[in-house]
Image (cartoon, rainbow, N blue to C red; front, side, top):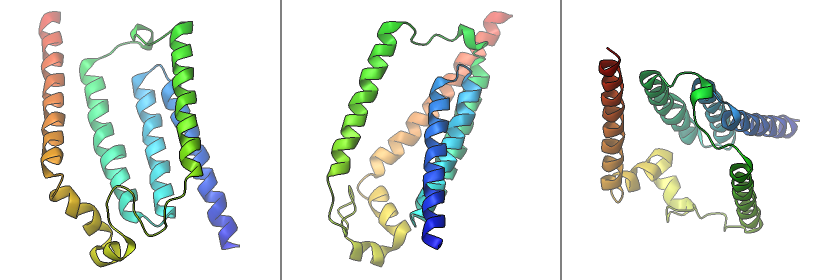
Length: 180
C-alpha cells in the first residue's frame, strides 16, 4: 500500500510539473509565466524530496522558486513591460517549426539517455561514489567541490547576477527620467 501511495504522488507531481512548464511557456504575460514557473519549481522540489534528496529539494525552493523568481519579478516590474500584446515573441510558421524541431531533438536525447543505465553507486558529475557520500553527507558532497574546485565560477556567477540587477535598475531609472 505505501508503494502505491508513493508512486501515485510521484507521477502526480511529475504531471503537474509538466503541465505547469507548458503553461509557463505558453503565457503571454511575464508575471503569469513567472508564477507558473514557481509552481513548476515547487513540484520539482517535491519530486526531489520523494527521491530522498531533501537537501536538493530545499535548495530548489530557496534558490529557484525563491531568490531567482523574486529577482525576475522585480526586473519585470521595474522595466514595466506593459501589455502582453506589446511583448515581441516568435510568431509565424518558421518560429513554430524551429520550436517543434528543437523539442523533437530534446525528446530524442532524453530517449537515448533513458536507455543507458549508470552503475548504481556512481553519482554523475561529482566523481564521488556511495562511500564518499556517506562519509561527507549530503551537504558536504555538494559543498566540497563547490567551494574548492568551482569557487571561482561560483563567485563570478554571483557577480554576474549583481551586474544584471544593477543594469535593470539603470535601465528602469533611465526610462523614468526620459518619461518626465
